[in-house]
Image 1 (cartoon, rainbow, N blue to C red):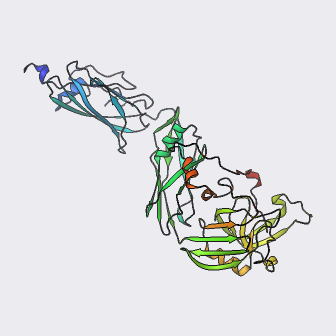
Image 2 (image 1 turned 180 degrees about the vertical axis):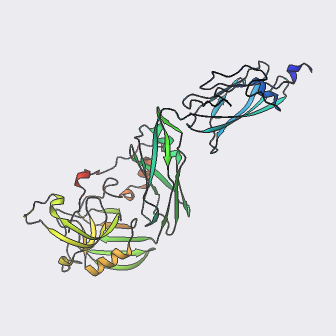
Image 3 (image 1 turned 90 degrees about the horizontal axis):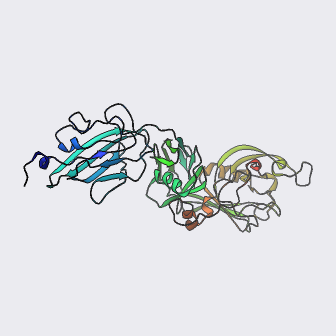
Length: 418
């Protein structure tokens, strides 16, 4: 075995990234030449190290060997959050190159392992920072507000910039995390370029805790588009409340945790104003709502016109479908459908319903002649998609997304009426 100094010197490597300018040659003054690892005197970082400058996050990171007699054996690059940068090492060990963009505004640690021609190992650890870059930021706003909701409440994510293309959407989706206790299977669905909804395969468990977070910050989403800020969200669920309305029998049966707690005579939409079939989620509650027929296109003074004070109004759709007190139709409740699309009941029953449900609780309608509830655009119709079709809306799914049905003109989203 040779005893020359070179045989005892661990092979070096050079990290060649965006900003190679200003790096010194392989000498004792090189920023990576610190002992105790003599591997350091043969590596250089493409990103600036120790001189106050920051690397361009839009350019790849490279580690190359400067010693023709040695080779790189391993390179790992991680940021302060523990995210690892993937890369490829050439077969001869002469170069490692990142295969995924660096995050902007991040602090990175590079760990390099080498060996010389005699197999003597060496290691070096260096650190560098990336700059902010010039890309736009995609901030994320999670919804709804923190609080306790029913088991049908979807989680929403609203993006500050549109994200198009499956690859860019996959970057975003992988960075948005939803965890529940008890654990459930769930998935995101891209409603449009700036909106995602998350729901489990089945309703959330009763009395669950749901936590939502993002680690998108700094990640490259697309050209000149990087992840921005997101405030984490924590939700809880209450009892499982499901109100099942049968338009044919004019009855609403209310269940708490799968046990029947009330059966209420109701009236739903009459011919021409049929109540939508399907699964709806309570959006909110108002003690008083003034309902006018003109808000749904009925001319004032026509035989169908109305202008009514409505109490104990529980909202189900953005277009104005409510469950509410309808004392004027008590004689028809339980026997006929006479409303303009809402579900009407006596004042005492409406008060009980109003006090029993919360946003996120589930209301279903069957046996109506109305159109099916839209999956999106008119409230939370998310549960009207099968789990198979819901999964197709994920950017991480190989299948083509299902086309959302029935998106409504937001200008028409007014109280539907009695």
